[in-house]
Image 1 (cartoon, rainbow, N blue to C red):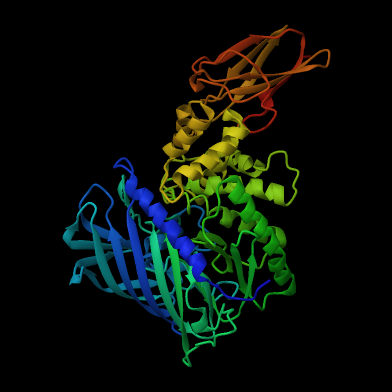
Image 2 (cartoon, helix red, strand yellow):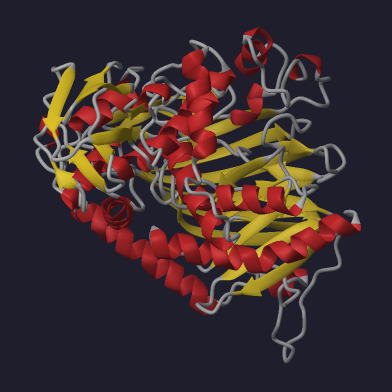
Amino acid sequence: MKKILFFACGILFLVACAQTKNVASTQKAQSNTYWQQHVDYTMDIDMNVDTHQYKGIQKLVYTNNSPDNLDRVFYHLYFNAFQPGSQMDVRSLNIKDPDKRVGNRISKLEPNEIGYIKVNSLKQNGTEVTHKTVGTILEVELNQPIKSGESVVLEMSFDAQVPLQVRRSGRNNAEGVALSMSQWYPKLAEYDFQGWHTPPYIGREFHGVWGDFDVTIHIDKKYTVGGSGYLQNPQEIGHGYEDKTKPLNVPETSKLSWHFKAPNVHDFMWAADSNYNHDVVTMKNGIDLHFLYKKDLDGKYLKNWKDLQPKTVELMTYFSENVGQYPYKQYSVIQGGDGGMEYAMSTLITGKRNFGSLFGVTAHEMAHTWFQFLLASNESLHPWMDEGFTTYISNKASQEILNKNNENPHQGSYRGYKYVVKNGMEESLSTHADRYNTNTAYSIASYSKGNIFLSQLEYVIGKENVAKGLKKYFTDFSFKHPTPNDVQRTMEKVSGIHLDWYMNEWTQTTHTIDYGVKSVKGKTITLERIGKMPMPLDIEITYTDGSKDNFNVALEMMRGNKPTKAILLKDWGWAYPTYSFEVSKPVQSVYIDKSGLMADIDLENNVFKVK
């Protein structure tokens, strides 16, 4: 195991850059039916670790690939949320079940503990423009519209203060990590087919513009820095420098300048601490996995971080094989933040965990690399595509890597979903991430019901088709901004089954599934649909002689059947409340959905035993 820090050789970076150019060429070739904006950031940051304040210079080249001329642009200033009276603060004070990490803490922050980003100047192609800060959004009136197909240079100077660690970002987190720097820079808002995306920062979910990041961080030389991107100057900072034939060129100053480049990403995170351990594991395919964690952790936690490393190799391999190949040459797991949160080429996680928890949070956050990072859906509007799909694939990865024997690795999600339904708390998946009535409703919808979308889809179109569909989804939509319709159409193309009904019922309504066996009279079996949401059915019949048959009843509007060895029965038109069919022998019992993949809210009526 190497003990270097973000060694970035020229060859690997050239590969990543070539990859970026290929993607950009593909984007240019797209028609007006799909387009996405492009932005290149060059930032120079001077950090004072004593005051937790920093000064920033940002040069941004923004390319308008939309068919529209833009007379305004908007930036996110996320750190402004960490101030008493902010919308994040007020929301936490008023919601029924506030996040315990937030609670009333923002309302109690002192002036030297708050977060802020103050824009001092902003120029469009060298000329000052009018701008106004409104909470966490910077509104900019351009001097000249950015025409369709045109690029513009926006240059900004800003001052900022890192807030006390409250949510995701901040200084001096509960485990003593000095700087968790996420959502730390003025970030251009996304403009797509739905227009500008400028929600205030209330507490969750993001949407960003694809581009290249060139970031230089000037910081106290005692600190070790890690995060997104490839380190460009290891010989100048004395970290990650392997060429022993050449002398180091470390300046005799109080600060070092860490220079990173991150190609074709839509965010940039970094973390820094004066007491980081740093390990690097190189996979057989050349990908470097970096692990940064506190040296002063208890021995049991240090051991967990060591044991995590070979398992992270297995996770990277699993996700690459089952979704799509990880396209960068580096990924970092960094102790910091307030739980677990995914970022470009990296994640922040808290590190004082038992091994199962440490592995679990790493599996989930790494899986986010595919679901929302590479497949960059708008997680503010569709958090279920982000959190739900991540939960699905990380559950499956954990099942295999840890050799679990759970018949259904997603049982926790089904329990959570049934809990909110039973307690009248469920809200539609079409709800904006910030607008759920409760945090519980948001979490169950996004993580649990979003996970069930895929696990239940295995029941509808077949496990093999879902597996093929995920790979096609990655192939067709990585480095883009896919929508729910893209998921639906991908699965339809793979399976040949119509799924508009499934997408509508599961993601845009709170209709529930409830099927039962109404009666068994002789050899005639009658089923009934009690819930509003229709579903195809798998039925196991046990006869009085002990033999069994499996049957499949597709919905008529599916216009097809999943791959199955079961006996196919006539399709069920969803409007008919009951469905009857004949079998050849006397019946002992009828069992609807023995797999448990259908989210039926009442399992008591799924089994019928003839007395």
